[in-house]
Image (cartoon, rainbow, N blue to C red; front, side, top):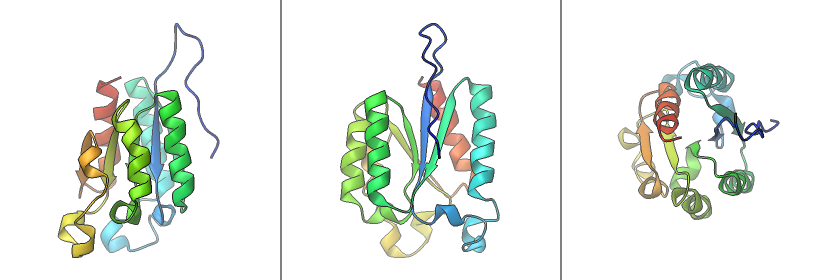
Length: 158
C-alpha cells in the first residue's frame, strides 16, 4: 500500500498514525471466522480512515506476512516520529526482532498492541507477548473494535 505522509505545511500538519497488521491478517473475514469474525481487513481500514478524519489525524494502514517488512515500517515510523498501532498476529509470541524495533517507538511516539481475540483465553503459547511490556496500551478480545479504541487513545496524545 502506498504510504500516506503527514501534510508538509507546518501550519496545517496533520499527525499520522501508522497501523500495522502482521501475518495472516490479510485473511480476516475468511480465516477462522468463529474466532476473528466476518469483518475484512479492508473493512477495518475503511472504518479507521473515517474515524481518523473525525479525530483530525491520518492513518497509514499496512499489512505484511513478512517480519522484516514490518520491522522496516516500524523503523520508518521511528524516523518520522509516528505512533504505531500494531496487530502483530503470531509474531506477538515469537519475534524478539520486532520487539527490538518497537522499543525505539516505545521511547518516542509509542505504540499500542491490538489483538482481535483474547489471546489469554486461547492456547497457552499465545498467552505470552514479547511486545506488551513495551506498549503504551494493549487491547485484546474486543474484536476489530480494538483498532478504533487504540486510535482514539493515540489521537488524544497527539
